[in-house]
Length: 301
Image 1 (cartoon, rainbow, N blue to C red):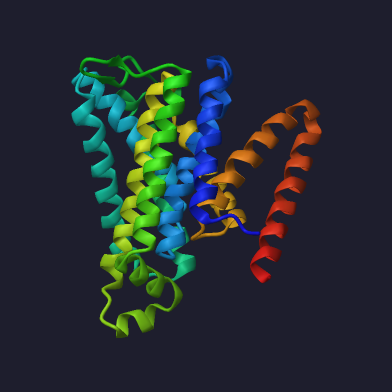
Image 2: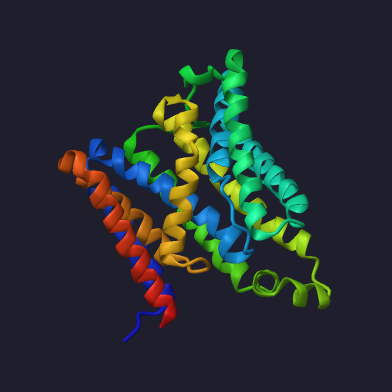
């Protein structure tokens, strides 16, 4: 018998909460990296799963969140309550603004356009070396902090910050998907011409979902940047966007839970395969190939 959607989601978050509560802090280092990836998978699901817009720019949006927050905290220490929302909102608005002209492109060209966004971000970071540290990276001197609470740091607290982002993003995703606006997004995704003939403003509707995806990735970048204590372009490389796309395809765009489970389980499994040495790459490929085939057959059924 199939488990109801809400029950499955509640069990998923309950299991993650248990991991955070009972796992020693030092052991959460790798888990937090996986949660960072999972939040970006969810962010991409807003773009592709709801709006039907493929994006290879999630790493750039996460990088904008990290660099923006770290640089602003260096100028205005202790202003996390103002800086973090402004960085997330600013990145989301930028993503929405970029989506509108890209709406005129075909799906293949859209992927190339978002790839260019990632390349432009990396080149900007490398070029503005005096500000960003360039390829050498940038030390993070100011942590996220809240009045009356203090610094928000450490493995366990960061785990719950990522978990909170995942829970908030999931709530917004489900609310949007089941709303009138979500049905308009589904119409744009399934048949753009039919949606336009019904009076739906495709550019405006899809820019909303793209902006939400960009803002969520930026929020993940804010947490990740202050958690690691050091940021560099390598942390927000194209590989992050490709991984997010891969796990979303494995789980199924538009589905909330399966892509998140795929990201956490498969990324953890691939981490454990480090003991295989040089054979790790081959086994990783086989594992991901099997997951893709399983997803394909599930869709066919």
